[in-house]
Length: 104
Image (tube, helix red, strand yellow):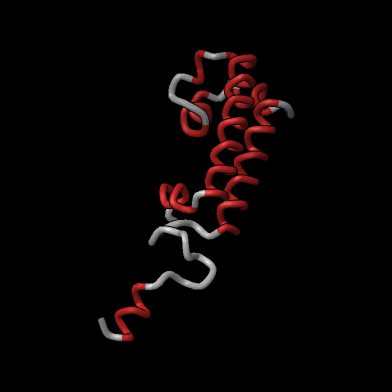
């Protein structure tokens, strides 16, 4: 193998364990913060009440069956999604290959 081929095949500095298209740590953290703020807004700060009457927003932002859930169902979904997002975030911090599902 030539030197040029070895150099191009090696991962960038600081991303030795990362897959070829995995997200940077900064992007991973920014995505989690955005998700966390959205789900907290839905679950705790009136987002469920605001979304309850907006069928198109529910279908696009939450889930296709969300218009049937009502305000309390949306809050529950928000809390469960927040917990799942936090677990996925920690997993992505530990295992960089998990981030390759979101190639940004």
